[in-house]
Image 1 (cartoon, rainbow, N blue to C red):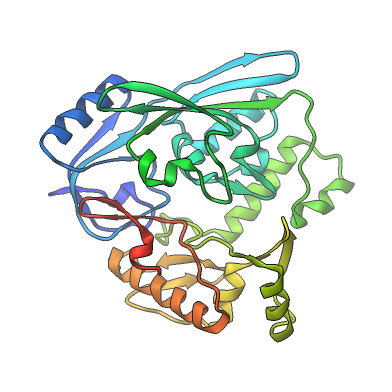
Image 2 (cartoon, helix red, strand yellow):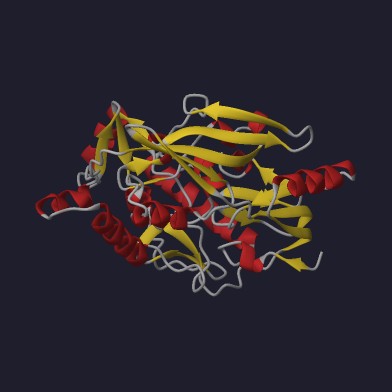
Amino acid sequence: MNNSLKILNTFNLQVNAYKISIIKDLQKLCQLWTKYKKKYYPCLVLGEGSNVLFLNNFYGLVIINRIKGIYIKESKKYWNLHVNSGENWHKLVKFTIKNKIYGLENLALIPGCVGSAPIQNIGAYGSSIKDFCKYVDVIDPINKKIKRFNNQDCQFKYRDSIFKHKNYKKYIIISVGLFLPKKWVPNLKYYCLKHLKIFNITPQKIFNYICNIRKKKIPNPKIYGNAGSFFKNPYISLQKGLKLLQTFPNMPYTLKDNCIKLSAGWLINQCHFKKYLYKGVTVYSKQSLIILNKFNNSSGMDILNFAIKIYNTVGKKFNIWLVPEIRIIDNYGEINPLIYFK
């Protein structure tokens, strides 16, 4: 158990694994997975560890997915990309813009690998991967059978997909198919992008603008361990939202699909967590939705206990129970967050 995962998780947690293997081809991945499963060791695939919280050491095999490759086909109206799951997401966005393939610029600087993107249905600034995902290819590493899920099969929702649910965790995502219209239309629906309409807007300008925003809002995990937003922004009913607005008239919100979407960061702010420090864990001063391993010496359990305190405090004050985005990993693999957040 002396194989360190510290540089392989963005919370910078000092946890170890029994075995760590960097994999660059699918055959090797299946061989290793089968070998360790036969010995009853737990197995886990990581991209860049940007959305995981290790509670303690992992008693099995951690596979670091570096299966790469970007393949492009074009039709009359679309660019069709087949991207292997070990590619870095942000580098993919930069690659497309460099090759004059536009549409992903709103999703710039989102951490992680391509294989993680559909699991979480990554999204930012009015765009999400479900808008461009044509299919997701997965493999069952035991029987080596490959299966394709089209966009509808993936059941994409806000920060959710079919791949986050129990019956589908036996699969490993090996590639993602994206389709991007050749006729580019800028996506400036998000409130902080609307003013860009007055400029001679280009995909590169949107890309640059969003990169600058994200660098200002999100701390560098090499300095302060973090995994971005810890909780999802909650959706509540119109009735409940209107009632809350009577008590908190300054509460920011947006109307979406006959629901009210609230800012989890604002809810956390109202509970005065910005100056609260628990065993080296706190919230980021510029965005309370981000939990920091401030001195990079806290444990996974310290971070979890801090998050539970946020969950309970916000829940009691607003009767809104936040849902974590982060995947929680214990000694034997991913666990249902409802064990702790219920």
